[in-house]
Amino acid sequence: MRNLRIRSASEQLADFLKEEIRSRTWTGTMPGESWMVTHFQVGRDTVRAAMAHLEEEGVLAPQGQGKRRQIVMSRDAFTTRRIRVRIFLYEKQARADIDNSSLLAQLLEAGFDAEFSSRSLKDLGMDVGRVARYVNQNPADAWVVSAASREVLEWFAEQPVAALAMYGRHHGLPIAAAYTVMIPGQNEAVRRLIDLGHRRIVMLTREERRKPELSRPEQIFIDQLEAAGITTGDYNLPDWVESPEGLSSLLEELFRFSPPTALIFQEAQLFAATRYHLADRGMIAPRDVSLVVADDDPSFAWCTPIPSHIRWDYRPVVRHVVSWAKNVASGKEDRRKFGTESKFVEGGTIGPVPKGRQSS
Image (cartoon, rainbow, N blue to C red):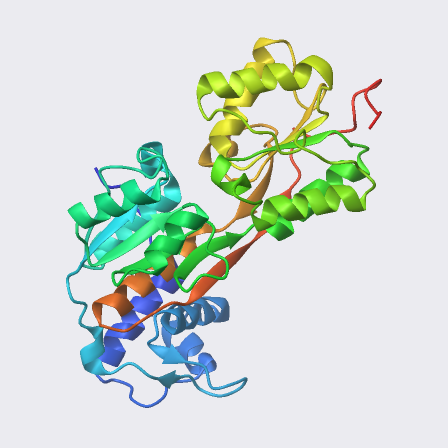
């Protein structure tokens, strides 16, 4: 069953304006913002957001401050060819993630033959050879590759088939991308922990973010600790076996000898599993350890107080992917990269270093 999605006022206005452009109500340039605010009885922010949607889709082009937007898409370009789009997920459980489920729904709504791949990147061990065989055995017109390793994205970038990296290690590769700019929010979180006196800060990330070299957020995390005079090493970005048992083993090891005073997680499921593990041993946040998660899970809305987390808006990411798919369907090469910024939300899972554990 597809999730019900309520379209925002700006999205509805953008769709209406696109139909008006298709019917040639306007040609050349669009009416000004003030005219649309008065004519459609909506707020200026709604008009601007609708215009931004259409610019992102390549329907309109800005002409500079104070000038009307130019209509750059021909009438025929609105016809979307029905192409096969496959979403290559990091792991199968990610089908339930709001960004992935929303992406699938919007691709279907736009008329694409879209579906999640039957195997995930983790199923295939993030192995380039196995990924290549799977792609060759399951042909598609376009691939959306979610949270892939550098090696996997390098392979996709060399293929003739259209591909977009949704998150993942795409930096510097000639491949389209839609992602979260995690560094601003992460920097805020780490800075706040350091201000609270934390020096034993550990970040738990997946292997493809640590190897063959650290990804940018992880490297900047290490740099930020060192800039604060904190000695760093494998302790701060530990290797671990990516399974429930492996996570439990890592946590036991961490808290046995030099217990961290703060933990940062890249994913909500690792945060939830760790919180359960600690609670089972009588440890709670922030009394015994501070916890930050670089994710904004819908379940956080039900938590009082909310967990400390890094918030970002998935909707622009999804819109960009759909826009890219439309360009692919129209035969247009599109290797644009689009990122949405993050920010740190201080919740109830961080606090000062527990007494007696202030040492470095």
